[in-house]
Length: 319
Image (cartoon, helix red, strand yellow):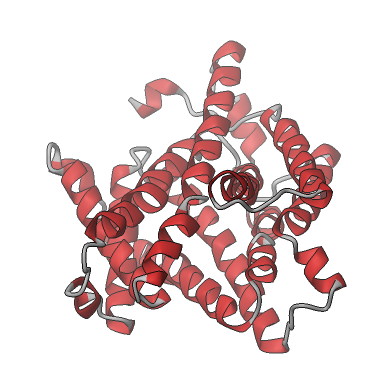
């Protein structure tokens, strides 16, 4: 069903629509802020000798244990229909785990700036897939917001400067895996939207997403050897699995109850902005005029998106 028609028939008062829209936008921004801390944890753990795939596997295990502990008070929240298991397998392995692998592989072949820029083609993929599958009709303002997001990400990550200085090599393979990281990241958002339609409570979707992703990553890179050599890094490992992993995904799925998938994907593009600000504040990485312009572009796009007509479910149908 078209989102606007479903929204129109929801019978939710306009004031409540506005408040839930703003709450959804806030949750996405908070989730993006938490995701942006990943580099801070990863930098410390890389210096301790951990490899990217090891960290991906360990953080999923920590996330899975964390969501299991959250659900212990009411295990019934994890109940799903048996026929939904293939969906959650595709969600966890085909979207969540594959996205991480493609992104890590791109990072091995090119600069961080180029890899992150390719990753944040995700909003464009979400818009295109949403238009084809759900026939979402995006207003011109939203198309403008998409252009601002993509342009802003290029400026914030420094990709434009890297290309201009010819300081980064982007081969065909890196371009392919980078675009696949953006596509699979976009698919994660679309799967998340479908997961919230199946179960409004984010606990079950996050649990089963982590369960299948952890299974896939464990087969590819067992984490047990990495777990056996923490050398005092257990606090950082646990924080990596909670702060930029479990918590933001719970918040993001909650936000998708009230926002379009395409809107949430574009709002999440404030992540590189927050990462740049954190790097400037904590790692003494300066902000030049180019990055400030990119931050302004993404902030303008986020403000435009926050004013959209939301997808709001009838609260009586959620409780």
